[in-house]
Image (cartoon, rainbow, N blue to C red; front, side):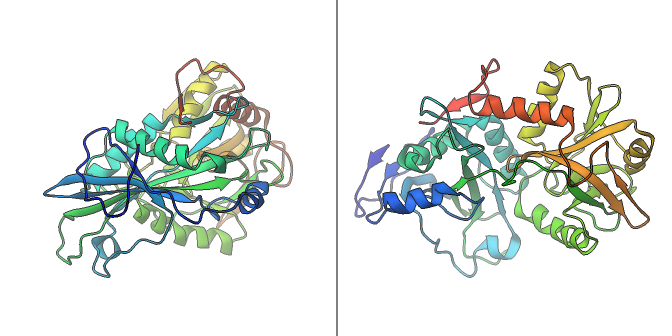
Length: 381
């Protein structure tokens, strides 16, 4: 990284990107930062700086820098506002006991970012530049990474790319902005993981074959909000979606992947079909579950198999996986014609033993408490 003054001319950057650093003149005081880190809330407070880089059809990527966190200035005609040409990622930086800071499988996030960019007709960012952007921001704002002694705390990193060209023509934008922002994050559940209730909808669809369901773009999340509202209206905290063709095959829970634990120890998750996001936590759970002696299956799972399995006791635990909450146990499922409690615990009681073991193993790996035998951790600072 290099420090620059505001009057230096724009530079074209090569791969991997070299980031100029423009330190903000008014960073948060130590006291202000300490107050945020004392009780960090997910996505509510942000660090002093952010990463930005610009792309244009004629110049490629240029002006990569770490600069003061501030509102973006885009034209009211920017393509992102009218045609939703944008993508994003989400991952965390973890403070280890020795003070170092690590990311968990950022190469997988980089690969998914590239796949999403291709689907949304956005320019390519290499894995090297993606990781370099994370490292550049964390290096400057390392003081914002919570202590290893503060429980399930981390620095949430949000890379994104938006079409900034001011043009109303319906075509891939010729000007684009890449950015990374960071937010100190505490545990998703303040009192520890607790089972949540799920509304099973067959009327609201999140994604369709051939669409953008496998891309991490805002449109998919917007499409899930009506289902979320439906769940809340029916007294549930999250929503489970089924496929768009037969309205019977399970896909995602909100923005998370879902898993089913069977009485014989098997663990199954809906197979990737082009309408399901390929979660980094999902992929990690499949490998860790196998290590713990659980046969794993990626296959089509019908909603009826879920309900019938709970009734018969064949399905003993259900959980969802995602970056924010890591592993979320499911304690209840409701639908227009019924309501079931899952396993031997209610929505107000603890977490199943298989879910608990997988969750603790994953967290121990992310925080460096057990050896990383697969090379999943990348040091950022």
